[in-house]
Every structure is written in structure tokens, then in C-alpha cells.
Image (tube, rainbow, N blue to C red; front, top):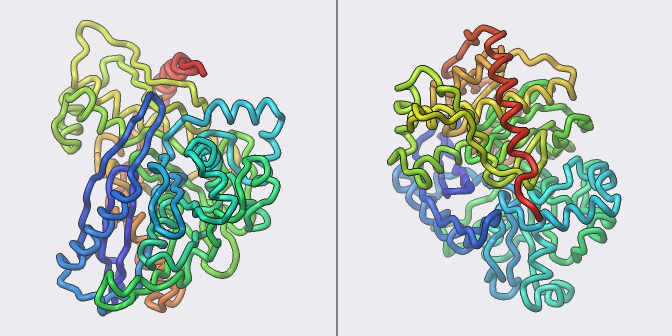
Amino acid sequence: MSYLLALDQGTTSSRAIVFDERGTTISVAQKEFTQIYPQPGWVEHRADEIWSTQLSVTVEALAQAHLTPNRIAAIGITNQRETTVVWDRATGEPIHNAIVWQDRRTAAFCDQLRRDGLEHEIQQRTGLMLDPYFSGTKLRWLLNNVPGARARAEKGELAFGTIDSWLIWNLTGGKVHATDPSNASRTMLYNIHTGAWDDELLRILEVPRSVLPEVRPSSGVFGETSPDIFSRPLPIAGVAGDQQAALFGQACFAPGLTKNTYGTGCFMLMQTGTKPVASTNRLLTTVAWDTGAGLNYALEGAVFIGGAVVQWLRDGLQIIRNSSEVEALATSVPDSGGVILVPAFTGLGAPHWDAYARGTMLGITRGTTSAHIARAALEAIAFQVADLLSAMQADSSIDLKELRVDGGASQNNLLAQFQADLLGVPVVRAGVTETTALGAAYLAGLASGVFPNQEAIAQQWSEGRRFEPAMDRDHVGALRAKWTRAVARSRDWETE
């Protein structure tokens, strides 16, 4: 039996999961790390804490599985995307905290690029909306705001990477500075048509080419782990951003197959094959993966605050002690009592792309309770996903037959049923819900010979539970109309 080790580095925690060659989860280890909010709209992580937590859970997962490293065929890495790290090539020390994908500090610069008439040019080359979400403007901010950083970058002393690159660098003892196309396509520096870093984008965002990682196929050997980490070197053979990895883990290999991951944010991806589909409904055209035979693409809609709204109920409002309590609280009332919560805590993502929107709660009465707010929070996740699917179907001209779902919040039955009701199509929870990590393991397994081809992987996909739509369509229409009114009131709230 061969085993694969997946490193799943997320926004709020680092996880390591061991899978066997049948795609069965053998062990899971997880550790949360510090979220840093220097000022409203800014979000940072300590890159060294990300590395230390990822390393510790890796050791823990192997110990839980009672496996020595020589039983591991390969390592796959999947990561929170767009989060930006710059470090010293000589010492490996970060020059600043990592700037997280949720961070909005570069909104004013994006506005300036828009005024300069560059939005269309950027979107044409990258498939992305002009938004602070992506790495390029974060990298520019670091180079301009950390003393001496730009001069050091120009001399070739600094390295930039998304979290996958940071982990690869540390795992290989600084020998490999690389990324894959799925992560590169999220930087606003990579041309999704040529499959390479783009000189014009580098000029626009004032980024020296010397800081960039090498782009290699998502499935392929990136390098081996440093001898001082494990008892023997292990090949790093699969890398993909978390949402593309989940698409791969859900076996969405044919155009039109669609998944939604309910994590910190919500991310819906539709596989579109070997040709990029340009969006006219403010979605993203992104690279799905490259298994060595060329780029595959996807349409993507991103919701910034998905499961994070439950963390807010826990940590901010403190109306629950653990995230697992939210379903019981929400189901204690038959509906939200008219409460609509728009969790635009860090702006709105697709299809609105409003960096200045902020969270809004409407419909509160004297009878509103914490249970109504909890239910409104779960419903808000589903409303945002429904908006994504409407845009995606308009772009692709494909009528969805079912939505495959995964991620932590997909385990919430109330949310899954309400999602099916809103969409009017079945919501299918995967048999293995750790599909993000599983996708990374599959990519590594393809490169290391554990799996002969994608067809063998597709045969492993299984259905866990299916939720059929049951709500009256007129009632759904009324609910979505009220949600749309609430979103409009959250828009453009914050000023520059």
C-alpha cells in the first residue's frame, strides 16, 4: 500500500492529512495560528508561524498514522491563495508579515489603476478582476513600504511567493523557489494565455522579475525535502491552490462539472477545459491545473466571507463557544425571523467586487434572538453562493445538473439544504469531504506513479449525501429579492 501526505495550509489553520492509494483518510492533524488585524480592512499572518505549524502537524499526522517517512510515496501541497510573502534569499527570513488574501490595503491603488484605464488590459491578460484580493498589488505594497525592500529586490536579494512557494522553499532547505500555474494565475502578474510571467504586468505593478518563483506543472516533482526534516528525502510532487485542488479532488475533469468549497471563504469553480472562458458577469477566468499536458482552465466565483462568518459568531459576538454549535442554534428557530446578514466584513467578492462594502444586518426587531442571527449567518453563505451560480450559468451557458460541495461548512445540513433550495438543483456532499487535501494528494500521486491516470482517480469519487431542493420557487424568489436589497445597502459604505 502506498501513502500520500497532503499539506493543506489554510487561512486560519495548517493541516496535514495522510491518504492511502484508495483515497481513504488515514490521519489528520490540524493547528490554528494567529490572525493579525493591524487596522480595519488589513489582515496579516506571521509566515514563520505558518511554517512552524505546518511542520508540526506534518510530524503529528505521520505519528498518528503509525507511518515512517519511507512509507510515503510523495507530498502534495495545497494552500490559501493570493496571500503574499517576501523573504530574504540568504537567511530565509520574511521581511514583513504575510499579507493575507482578505486584506484590502491596496484598494486605493487599484482605484488608481482603474482611473488610468488599465483595468481592461489587466483583465485580458490575467482573467482576473482588478481588486486588492490578488497578490500583485500586495507585493508592490511590501516593496514600497518595507524600508529598503525595493532596492534589495532589484539586487536579487529577495524572493516573493504565495504560501505554496514559501512551504516549498522551507521544505527543500531553500533549494527550490517555485510555484504552479494555479497559484501563479492568482498573482495578477501571470498571463493565462501564454502561461508565463508577463512583462507588461510586471511594469504596471512595478515588480522586478528577480523576485518571482519558477512556474512548474501542478503535477510533477518540484524537489525533495531537506534531509534534516524527515529521516529520508521525500519528493514534493503536487502543488495547487486550495480551490483548484478541491476541483481536482472532486474529480471535476470534464467541462461543466462544478464544485463549491465552503471554507473561510466560499469558492465555486466550473471546469471549462483547455480553453479559457472570458467572463461577462464579473467572474474570474483562472488556471485550474497543469498535469504536464498543458493548462486546464476554470471559471471561478469567490466569496470572501463564508465559514468565517461562523468564526465571527464565535469570536466576535460570542453567541456560540464552538463552531460546531451553530447548526443546533440556527435550527432552534424555523427561519431567520426576517433578519438578513450581509457579511461584507472585508468587502464583497464576486460578482460585486466592492472593496468598500462592509457588513450589514437588516430586519432586526425586538424579537430578534441570537438564534435568528445564527440562522441568518448560515443563510448568508448560501445566498452568496447562489449569486455566484447565477453569474456562472450566464457566462458558460451551461445549466447545472448538480453542485458538488466540500469544505468544513458543507457538513452543516441546514446550510446544505438551504443551498439546494435556493439553487433549485441537488447539492451533493462528497464521500470524502477533505477534497482540497485529497486533490493535492492526487496531483502528487499522478506524478509519483501511485495513480496511472485521471480516470483511475475519477473512479474513486463517491457521493456522501445528496440534498434535493424542496422550497417553493416563488418563496425562493422573494428571499433572493430581499437578499439583493440588503446587499445594495452594504455597498460603498467605507470611504478611501
